[in-house]
Image 1 (spheres, rainbow, N blue to C red):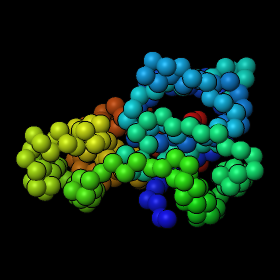
Image 2 (cartoon, one colour):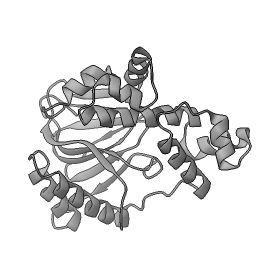
Image 3 (tube, rainbow, N blue to C red):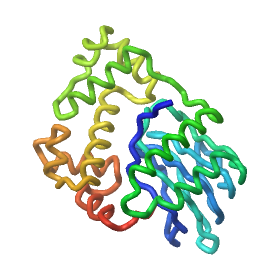
Length: 253
């Protein structure tokens, strides 16, 4: 089974004392496999501890808060991954036994996750990991055929100013029905999704070495200041800082 994904960031980390996030609403999924420590997640006003030996998948564009006890820091293998937005619509977790195939795959990825030159091998292992994960937690296939085509249209025109009416016309739906259907499936209006997609592509280009100006141009922003404002609203830091903080140094998750 083939999977479309992009690992934006990854690492094996014992988190620093000041680690944590409040009302996080990321443009990607967080995959955490917990080795130890005392940490908690607050989602929909429910607080839950992160358990050792469990895999957690945090949803995209769906706010949650995370924190830990600095005396017992979170010890975690983690990945920030772009995938289909509908795959994990809610916080997902499962126990991973020590002798399971999934555990062996996680240990294999832990061994190479921060070693330079192993990107291809890591991607192959992660693809197999997703196949095994799909057997345990079937991915949600939220997109209808027409909405899948709309997403491809968005991707193909990511550097242009695309309006909702244009997307509705492309889908063959009346505008109000299209907007309602799109929000029902993806949990956000089409214009917000398009901006999120632009920021996701821009983040990937920044991580790949592009300057802020080139990243802005790639996603259709002629005004670098307007791009920086939009990027900061989604990533909680300016694009220049994002680019520097993820260049050569393993990032704080």
